[in-house]
Structure formats: structure tokens, C-alpha cells
Image (cartoon, rainbow, N blue to C red; front, side, top):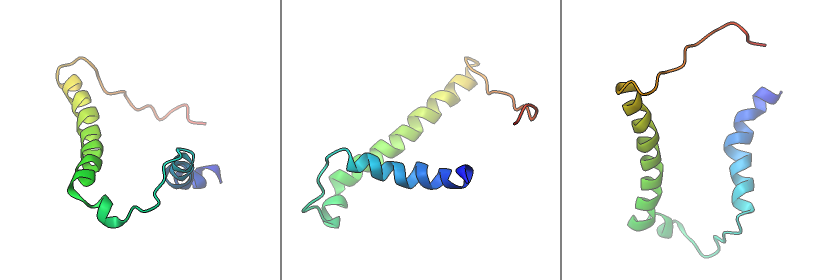
Length: 78
């Protein structure tokens, strides 16, 4: 049951809980405000920038032989 609920809790329940506890008010904000070019650019920039930054840094580290990918061992699973 724990494994079945992990995705729901990690990707839905926990973000909702964190947002509710952040005291951010969305009263008076409509879809026009969110889809305006400036907030949309900020949202996309944060999301895409994070992906490009993290994956790009690791890709560069692997290419420069500064880090190596871990090997997969199938033994030892409980």
C-alpha cells in the first residue's frame, strides 16, 4: 500500500500541503493573470532553467570525466 500511495502523496498531496502552508493568497487572481507573458515566462524559465542547469551540469561532468554514472547491481534488494 505504501508503494501504491507514493506517487499520489509525493506529486499531489505534498505540494498542496506545502502551498496551503505557505500563506500565499490566490484571491482575485484569474487565468488571465497567470497566462500573461511575464508570469508565464517566469514559470517556464524556472522549470526549464532548472532542468537544463541540473542535467547540463551532470552531462558536462560526465563528458569531462569528472564524475561517472553509478553501476546497477541487482543483488541486495530486500
